[in-house]
Image: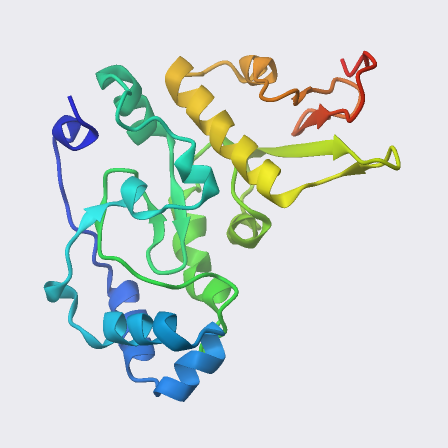
Length: 238
């Protein structure tokens, strides 16, 4: 059974805040869009055409399938069973520059926008801050697998936030973050959480992928570190 077949409720998400942003962008000139989005050529034309068309003319897609970055590519959407899909929809929330906060099964329209884009007279962080704050107000714990860019949206969260970091040893024996590998690991961890329907925070420490293992030495109660060493010697990271 496919992911789409498992969805029992389908609601198109079209917040007034989203519409306001959309209208703001579609009124920009081609040169302004090119400057703000830092794009040109075919990608610029596609972006302009996307924003110039009405929402009603666009196909909708589940939020979890709308994103195709490295993190989301690691999810086994087509093989999750009913229980795993329910866990994902109950536990996972996606931070979005266009929609604020999304559930995996929310139906959304395609868009191109990230938190680093500076729209005229609008700070996307300030724009979504209250909505994000209110949304997570009653959440006791958040496992943060978001990028630094989107993690900033959670700056006012007052509950317990567990940040996940992936480091590997360089040739100079220093620890560093390799961006692509860290993104892939965050996606693999999310897949691990969904497949195993993790509720016990200590079980997150059991996650490992391509020699990244939990480090007891570096980790703190709210900061879990996973290390990958460059040589074949055995390191006691626990």
